[in-house]
Length: 185
Image (tube, rainbow, N blue to C red; front, side, top):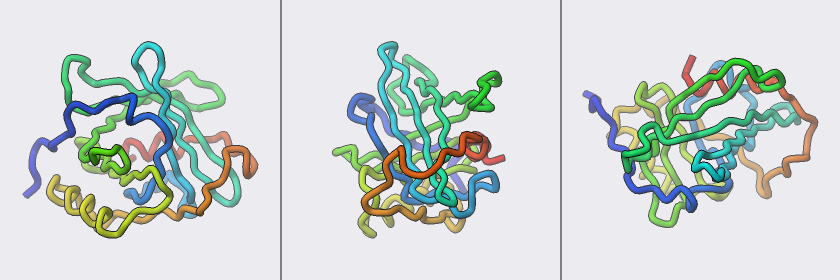
């Protein structure tokens, strides 16, 4: 039986967390392209303490991306429970869509992380590099199991080495699949 409340990392140094993270594996979403590869997130700390989020993926040679803002769900808590807000559609940002971003595991060197949501419908394994050691991957999968996730849904994300530059590939500005995949809908 799954725990009711997931254990979340405490005391995350947001400045150290900033930068690029590659998606090593995630729960697939019907709104995410089945042939998506080189998925990654880049986080930049804003002056007001919020975080600029850039999510990118490549599908059929096209770069899809969406931008948003992350902020602490409870500014007084030291738990790594963030909320992420995107506007849809990205080309005409009028509707805010908000989702949870909970850091369930983060190594001491800020090189790999396990990200989930209270619904347990979404899960991401992230790494600073495009590939991850199998032992570390398995450790993160075990952590996800201990937090009540059905890891049979976890699928590895193809990553090329070296990763593509942002300018490579034509642009696909739809970005809708990123939003819907955040909410597991």
